[in-house]
Image (cartoon, rainbow, N blue to C red; front, top):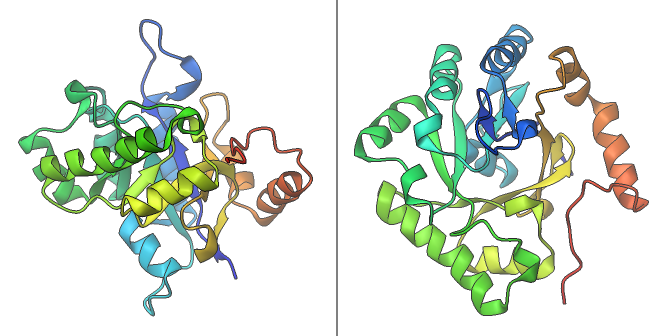
Length: 245
């Protein structure tokens, strides 16, 4: 049984600088336009905790048109514009932080603002590695240490995870489970989720070249099943899964 729950995957909001990859930056005006598109069509943003509860069968469930907004590689110094627009639409979201990049992590003042706004902190490992290349000990350290470090920082449980570069397989899923995470997002494409895949949830990649009108297609049934079929046929090259030992 699957649950309609589109999960939007962003990285950075604004303009790229230096050697940054332009494809990971959605312009500020486009981000606001996308959230306005969602709001106008009756979509309601939900928290990662609410998504977890719904997947686990909580009776309250989700709104008719839910959406979960996620950010990988979150960096607080460059995140002000995104937070302001989320607040404008009263949309909660979650950012996956790289625990070893201390300059990118939130400080006490940031955390209070996060709580008021419903912005949650998730884990993106200690050093943002390609997890399938790690030894078992390195896997445990990257998944477990990042959770402990972030919990020490934010003072609340950190139970949501994102695989760096989308790299995962059975071994990586088990390491994430053993570290105590309750959800994990991947780069698998789709807009429906199931409890059996709660540690490899599907997402919709948000790219700067995609106009807002395409968002309606990404939110539809056809787009989801197209990628499920491609995955089943081994044609989904964007799927970063590795078989693992």
